[in-house]
Length: 261
Image (tube, rainbow, N blue to C red; front, side, top):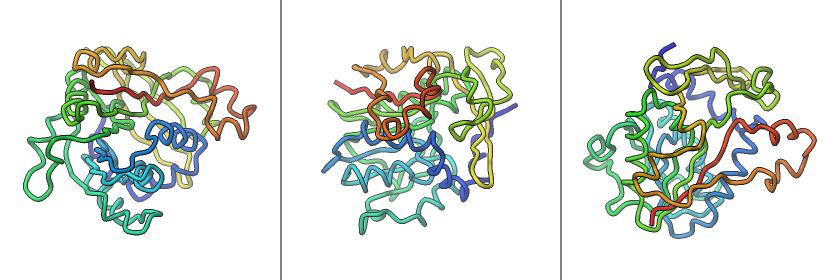
């Protein structure tokens, strides 16, 4: 089951529907916590797709600007049609096409360029779950660390656990299926299904060091204080702790934060 890097082109228009899924609601809470107050800060959203979290950084965290980088031209096009809640917020988001596993600076030039001097915050949400090899994964982390200013913050959501029974039945709005080892690589390939109306699915690949939160690569590259944002204090969990009981016992995702000294 090869993972097509531009597979998101085929369902870009449907992707915004994921915000209604329970798993997306807890993800949103965790990202809000991780972002904090971004007043006056620049944000790079690697693999940002149609700008779901870019708009959150503008509307809720008050970022001064967000550069969204994604490999899917269609996701970027759709993102430019979705307004922000904050008036004029869409003018603070810029859209750049590039492959997150390859050096960004070599792919983006001319009028569409990265911020000189780097970014205060770099997000990489679900990006690492499309690394088909350790080389891909290292390339992604090199972009994260290389574009982050000294003292800047990293944050990113990723698949953490493939085993929960609820991911077979989709209790929280998503499923994992067709899980296999990747030949010659320490990782897994699988299909992630989103139970939207209509539903859609896509192929993913996650390296073992991502799934286990080992994060040896970013540590080698200089990121420090890597930690998981806690689930228990989110408004989503507090509103219905019984519903989220299975998730809390065995989370399938994690939002990791860190910083560049």
